[in-house]
View 1 (tube, rainbow, N blue to C red):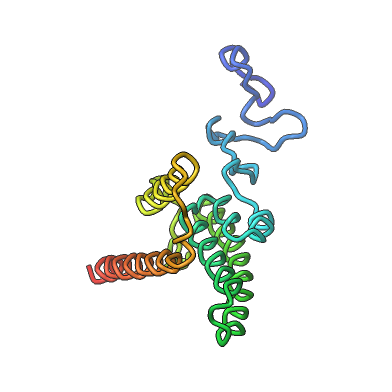
View 2: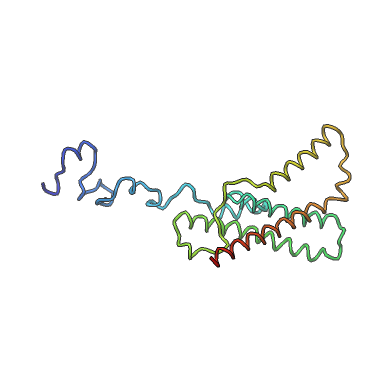
Length: 205
């Protein structure tokens, strides 16, 4: 059989000869069909995220992280920004206003950079980047829920229901709202310490 002929079985399947390829395409050789159709072969994966869009969305703090899939991290960012704005608006700590204002500007820009960076690292992970080339603190977004986030939303919804349905006054929140960022900060410290311990344990093992 010469180079311009191929078997009837190949013709019935509609396959082109191994030595030739349809006009305008590169020779396929012996590459399986499923390998030829893999999205990465064309430089496109529908799961990829746009770092530019992630950074733009993060102009609303936390939204870029949510776009990439880091829901918990996104809510942490918006809570930090909202807490600092509440402190500035309350005018209860006038001596700390310059420090809080500088921190707010820094954190806002960090939030934008973090979203774009995580989108880029997420895309690298999808392309199968060498784990050694990835930052140690990088993890793909999880699909599990958040117990703390769920409990917080339930409590907020319960308080709003008491106010709208049973006319329970919420004036006490003006005096007790600092408890919320206090508890949230304690939870972040706890998570950081437990996660750090687990990481150190894995490295020692």
